[in-house]
Image 1 (cartoon, rainbow, N blue to C red):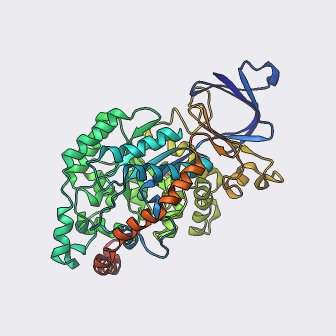
Image 2: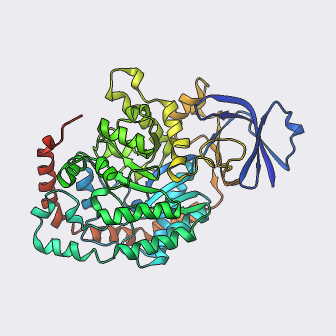
Image 3: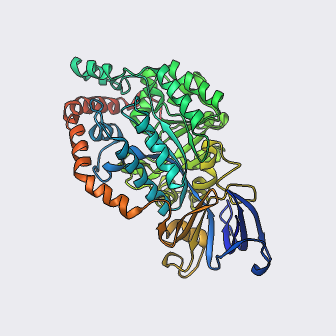
Length: 492
Ligand SMILES: [Zn+2]
């Protein structure tokens, strides 16, 4: 069907607003964007009058973890390393069923759609890589929700106690043996599993690679992952220099920065998405720019976990493409990209008195749209409203409170809006949200299913969290020792 959104105000990638645009959609594609034509003369089967509305490209959440959706709101005042072990101890396995995996992913889908996200990169940890049904449930949840998604099946091949400096030294032998025995899944098997998903999911929902972090995997495995990326035309998500401890880790493990290390083994290239980069130095930034790699900035989780503030201005100035994400449900604790854009536009202002270096509304809007599209090689398809691109967009009602009275629409979009003014969400030419209702998910039923299962779900979380107390005292010692050694790295 050919249909037109007529008389809309349209946001360009640089944040300027064009008026009286008619956007015609044919199938999954934007067929044309015109102006100056009388609405009655439009050649379309259906015309939606968007007078007083703003059309923007669908937002791209470049980093989400849907696996801890049932953990929202559990923690405060814990740094990354301690928080990770507290919420899901490495000695525990979470036995989610296929239905529970589907439920938690669709809960995230509701939040994403209602806050204007049309594309998401979901970095998913599964505790059981032998169950295809559980893994499929994530992909299927996005397929059914009508969202565009790139989904990973995270794997790293080093045992947990070897991924944090000094933990190996402090941890009792019994716990180390147990952690070692958890590494039973072989990298070869995982690569085969990944290949099958890469072949199978090639539509609106696709597969992406994730070896978690450079220090969490062996050189051999990392090289295999990047070879697979090249062979299968895939993109790789990897957490890099999120925390001070990770900065120190590079020097203790490899005698160089983690970014330098990645370059030295040939895994820093245009297929590389470096998640976080809070602790990159000037040389790291130059290397990332030279490699054409992307950085995914997660300002809210970086604040909540006290990780720090990524030097976004420096990255942008060096020519690095920066995208935006919301990160863990349990370290943000929302998946709202309007919030990520606002915090992203605020947090860099406190790093400099020189206000010509501040990151603002214009920059974060680009990060949340065009910036994200490059992380999965879709820059020619999504992130910008142009004829020939996928019809992924959001219609925003400007009669709402955040835009009353209208001042500067871009500034109001970033600093006043939270998703409440969204009128319509379209992905692949299909309306998935309209008049306050998601058309692809029965939201009330889903919420009721989760409420009914809440006791069982929380009991599972409590059961797996019990073992945290065994490991946390040793982890705190390792954490403190790392921070005491902060001087191992010359601060740039
Ligand atoms: Zn992450």
